[in-house]
Length: 192
Image (cartoon, rainbow, N blue to C red; front, side, top):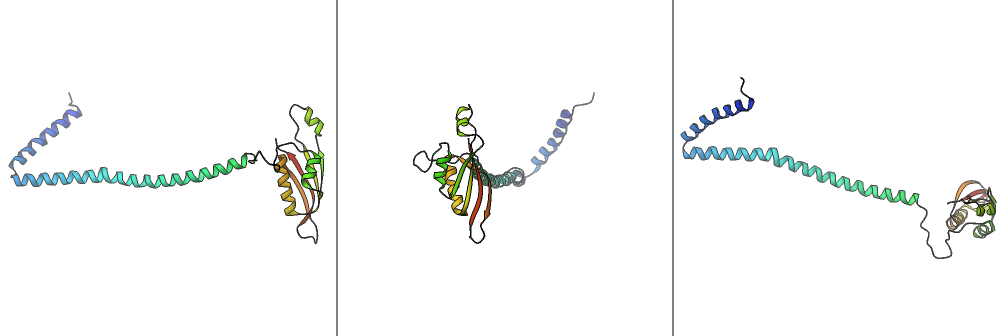
C-alpha cells in the first residue's frame, strides 16, 4: 500500500529535523545567536515583502480610488439635480399676483401679453374643456406683429409661467430694417 502524501511529507520533515537539531547542538552559543538573528531578520523581511508592502500599496490605491469615486459621486449628484430640475415643473411661488396656476382664457392671455399680440383659441373650446372628464389641453394661436424679439420672449415666459403654457411652435420672421423686431405666429399649449 502506497503511503499518503501527508505521511510522506511528515516523514520528510522528520528526516530533515533530526540533522538540523544535531547541527544546532554542535554550534557554539555565539553561532546559535547569529543563526537566530539571521532567521529573525529573514522572517521579518518575508513578512515585510509578502504582507506589509502589498497592504500599503493596496491602501494607497484604495485611497486614490475613493477620491475618484467621491468626485464621480459629486458630479453625478450635480447631474441628477440638473435632470430633476429639467423634469419637474418650475418651482412656482404660491403667493403674489405675478404667478398663478389657473387655466388661461383668451381674454386673460391677451391682457397678459399686451396689445402687440392677437390671441385666439385653437382646437377644443373652453366649454368642451369644462364638460369632459379629462380636460382637453387648450391651444392658443398668438399672432405677433412687429415686436422686439427680447420683449416677445419675456412676455411669453411670463405668460407661460402664469398659465402653465408651453410654446409648441414658433414661426417668426425678422422685419427688414427694424433691427431685432419680429412678426409671425406662436402656438401655445397648456401643460397638464
